[in-house]
Length: 204
Image 1 (tube, helix red, strand yellow):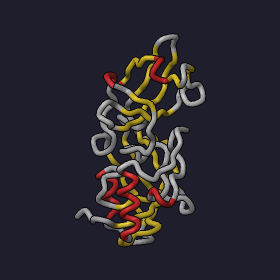
Image 2: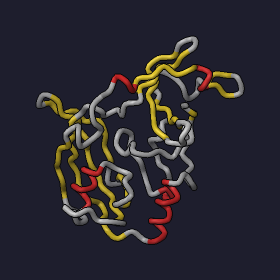
Image 3: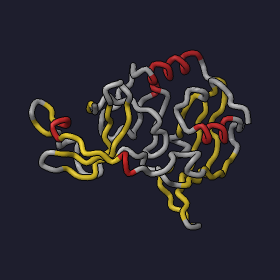
Image 4: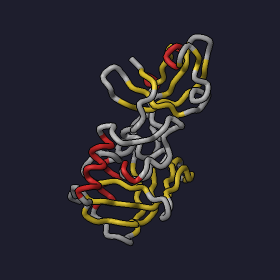
């Protein structure tokens, strides 16, 4: 299926992980709070975009993505011991945002943004897992297309601003909530972690 550019797409879905023939629901985007994106910007999985990009409004879908089409293998090398001092603000550890199982926005020396999950907090180190929460998983998406049309110039500009880090008011509470209309819509917890609109903590 050809990849359409600059289409405004909203989808409602249930996301399942599939293992040994068993499915587990891990996330849901409802019709009232759908997952929104503009095609061609690389903000969601390429395989996901290919599956839904050519569908008309009202069309249903049910497809499975192997781990290689989704978030790849789980890599032990992506579990890091970071200095506790990195997570201090004005000399005090950031207990509000850094706690076990918290999803934390990070940024490396090159300015690349990504997320890590806190595994443990020690006296000197914070153990972080930089693997995507769905790494190593086979994913099944079941849902329908809420909207599919050409994006307006304003919507395209809002997406450009979002990707450049401008105009987005996401806090650092996991960044899984509503980024607001000006940011291109809603993000959902596990899916759509290809970017990030948080400045977060610096990781060299």
